[in-house]
Image (cartoon, rainbow, N blue to C red; front, side):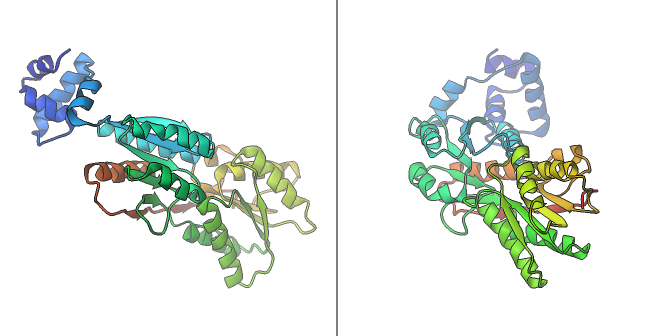
Length: 326
């Protein structure tokens, strides 16, 4: 169906339909609703190629994700896609596996004008190389962020969140609090460990133990917890930097014949649905993952429309959810 037929069906002008489709200009709310209803009724799909030729835009966003199997990443991508589609954009998703060769291959889409901008969730240590490859193209970094520079970022205050968890565990009487961390090339891993250490030092707790999981997976969390349980003095609490790692830790504790939280309290991070699926249900720091994704798109579209706008560093709110595990 053509745009002219949509206009006739909605009882509005072709110009009004065009403004609704292209998210440009002002349209009366009742007219917008009539156009949207007509589009839905007729299953109309705008000619994206024609729009690209007319506007010099592809209306596509490249999203580079280090590990789409990570439930947190999946939720952020969901938020990205919802907000992109609401603004007339589609996403191209690349699961890089933290492999710069794959990132480099995906970024060739920039030179061909196939995408208008990029959202990344790569390790902080890779940002300098990504900056070189991306150049001046519109770019937003999710979850991992730089304290300064020309790249807009959105995430949470990882230090404050980690500090809250450790203080919570100390307040409930825990004396030997261990940390299950991940790859320190990720800034969030370094910051959460920094928060862990600072509260222990502040409270005069000399006991500490850190296990580094090989990946953000259930099995890696289980293995890390088994290592902690083999120590001469086992922990009475564990803070894991993701819910997936914490879930693996829960299994290892249960298999050792110990109970939670009486023998060992466990806290995760991210606030994914997994935290409510395990037994006991997992205390966790809930990140606003969908909102992080949506905000990343808003920042990117602003950069696309206003290339000279300065970089923004947005810190979203987090919240602690206390459940049976701690």
